[in-house]
Length: 245
Image (cartoon, rainbow, N blue to C red):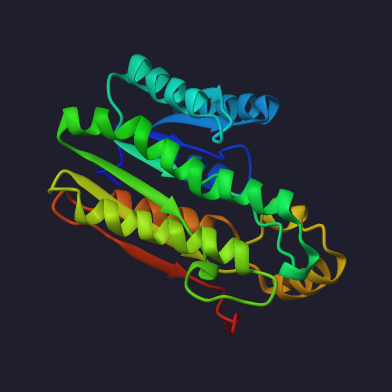
């Protein structure tokens, strides 16, 4: 993973799940990590573990729905390491429910985290990457960003939006900014724990019995980062082998 060694990587949603697994894998590859999430105690634990294993990591408590906090995160990364090579927009929410349930507050939270959080991340790092004339933005979409399921309408809408942003970024990269969209299927994380609709939660729990380990996604992210500068891995879909849809 020579292309990973020494790269400065910001990871949002780093306190658990895909973000944590990705941090652990990239740290082993020699990346300099800037860990971001809302739960400070988990960030401290992850940072300390990475350092104990010989890795390089700092953290900053960040709510991706707050543009000022995301801008502060980018500044902290630049001040600590002098540059930003990769942003992994991983923070996300998945409170699935049928539209008839009218869980409008949950819809708004998904839009704020899953779309605006990604946009705030792009806005915070893009000027720095342009100044460097190189950078890589990796956005976490979902299989729900390729196919709509019952109870997934709003979540799918946000993840389709992430795909659109990733493709727009690719087209506007001008040979400087690489853009990768990662679309996981069922992965064993805390993402399903926020489903408040009982019937939907039951169905998702049954489907997620086949869920794969978060490191499967971390390996895909590492693969995209470790490509030579003239190679841009734009889209990866990763499902459990047994997932039918």
